[in-house]
Image 1 (spheres, one colour):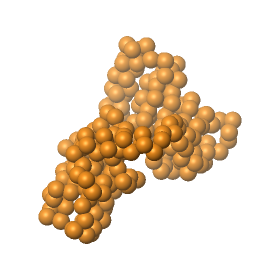
Image 2 (cartoon, rainbow, N blue to C red):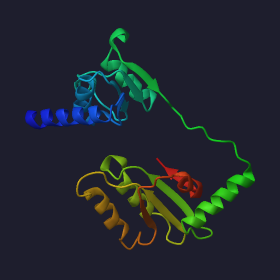
Image 3 (cartoon, rainbow, N blue to C red):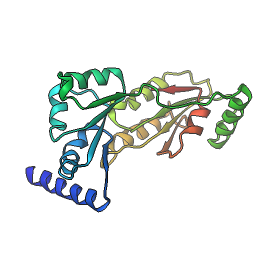
Image 4 (cartoon, helix red, strand yellow):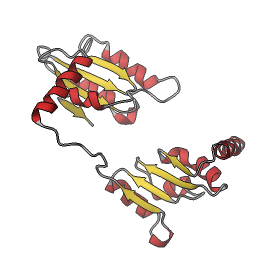
Length: 212
């Protein structure tokens, strides 16, 4: 409701003033509307990550209070942002980082050592093929279809699926459904839910295949 929206803006404004924020960053567009209005009233620079598909009208609505810079996760998402602001003169700064991670070039021996250490930390057995899924456990991420695909794998092969992440929604209904599916006889013991991981390095080091 309008009342709840107004209260949210006032609370966010109070929080930003208390911490003397100089930049407001929203990790996705859906939470940006109220935060942008609160920060704009204080003259704070506003930055928003664009991650999901959105129509131009939706983008303009969620950013109606103003945005100084937008970080896009792909060229496809940047194109949507450009469609929302056809006139470059009235467009926020757009940045697209296709691969912002700097990966050091390691020797074959070092990569093998890191892999062995990581698989030992996660108790991976010798000869097991390890698949990995990392992300929020939400329907749009597709973990349940992945579980169905894994269930079709040959039972005589040694494999496991490691799941890093959790359901951000109240009640966690999707994660519960995934866990229940993983307990069925055709998947039992093969799927391991790790929850939220602060450091993903070992997770990726142990994998044979990352599912995205």
